[in-house]
Image (cartoon, one colour):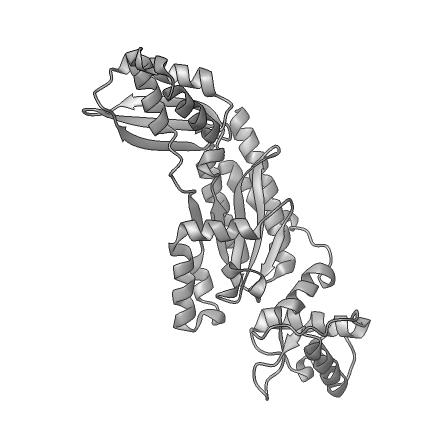
Length: 354
């Protein structure tokens, strides 16, 4: 898709806005360049093909449309889609039947946070026919509710960390020597009572400070506690990224080119890079719409991202998004992302209080 021109200096006339809106709606359905004849016959304006052709030429000059081939119709640019989202599609809501469907599936999901997030990623894809993405909370910002240690064979210990928002993280660590179950219980009770309500990053920093003090070397159990805790609260783990619906997008005409398919799959292979790009796209409250050249994430494929944050109260936990070709039904997708973000947040609060 060509870069938008810098000539968009005047507001569009009512006629230009309606023609642009008709072209976008028709292109979203057909995936084919839209001709003036098609707009004349199927659009909402009673205008001749010649008149519409002139309007389309003006919209192209202003950077809202482009012509992929000399004999083809027009296709919306990123600027055209942005204008559609900002002022042409109007306020939209999620239909009542879709809200009921979402509510029922989330109520039937496992009560833990991971279960809710998994169902949400599937609903995002299923209801949009695009790729659904949900990013779990950053491990360092997770607020501790409780920690438990389970002895395994030899000197191995299973660590179970439960966050305030209900997310559970499991990891196996090797200790210097086998620790009896009663010591592990004492350690888990001590750490839960001492650090509950703090983020794992805050806990790690306090542990490192405590380990630097001489008294940590006097009490053997205290030394074991600090070392076990330090390794338990290691922040090296990446966020988990749930991706659902890739196969649905592969069936769309934009992915007929095998090179684009390869780029799409590579995008989801490097999870750390995907999270970084998502974080760069989603800032602040509300739903963010990122189209084409707006970011590295979308420009590589000429895709769009519709994303929002979810969380508990004022504390943002992660991101949920719909990702797919820029030719998407924004009037359906934007309210869907907004509703799922709010509903997931409410369900996480309810699961924490239950």
